[in-house]
Length: 78
Image (cartoon, rainbow, N blue to C red; front, top):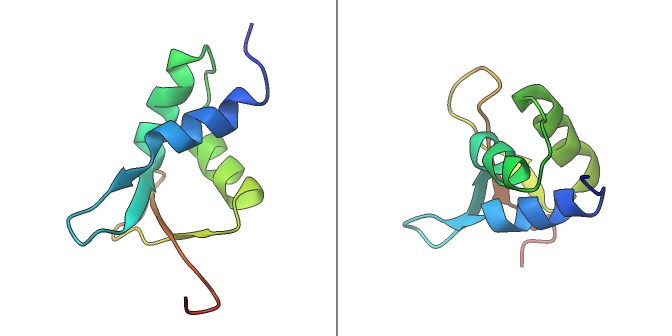
């Protein structure tokens, strides 16, 4: 039985480091990590979760659709 706190674990497991050294997470990777923990979220639902429950990631997707990419963002410039 999936537990709510596992979504955060799946999100952290989906974070990757890009060639420029920035931390990014794609919706596809997040959904794959969720599936490993018995969560079945759609890409749209996963995007919504990221938008609501993370404050340090912003959407940096280069194309339209539900397959989005989020990157760590520090609004304070640090």
